[in-house]
Image (cartoon, rainbow, N blue to C red):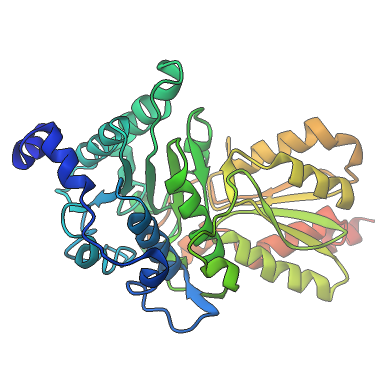
Length: 377
């Protein structure tokens, strides 16, 4: 497929020259919100945060381009790339055929060449068609070249459970990618995360897997003026304590952060002070923040939508047992997705994904406050 693109563009150098053209005459600060349709200075949807981050980075660096299915003419399957084709043209917003292996290979090859591609997958379930390019090419080349070749590429798209799309469109791949050296894996929760982490990912010299959530795109969050600044980024590898607590540490990422914050509010009504950590970065994992919290609360509950075996929660539990075992006052607990392919039926789908009541129930067990434990005593 790369050969076909080269022929259309007139050879390798013509392809580079075509991609490197920047047709936007807007300065980053002035252009920041043209594509997103922002309502006011303090509210931003996750979709708008992602859109503005891509637009600003494309305006600031002519090496950045985006490639994938329906990213241009259709404005993105989830409208994350809305307005980018009109602003930057088809040379930097590249619609592709339905061939994940093909356009991912083009992206990785262009990163070898010094460009900064953003590869959009309509869902990370489809990224399995391109897994060889992501793992064997993007993740390993910097090491195998003795540090001579950098691979500044971002793989982004929705990950995990959505609604009513069944097993082949609902899998969480966080643990898959987090296991691979050479990749950085990020999972934003809110608009601040989405904007700051995506800008950091695009600027990073290493390949980054950026795991979004379809159900979060339309969610609105209040953001500060700092977040709206074109220079704003968030550090890769650093978690955020979303809620302070003293009785229990709860870790989560992506959509589950919001569910855990709601659970913490319910727990507070019963006198349990839960500290909620938004992981943000899955690899590298902020073990220091997690362990510091556990050493304060002496209890740990991990929450994720992925399957339980070899999951993110399992890695966090292992880290705490290795580094903070003597601080624990109770066994660690994990809340995960059910160990089955995602059902299509709505009632079964709900049972397969962690719910607020599951988190509250597990938190009470960890704190020895469940009705079952009280009855046993």
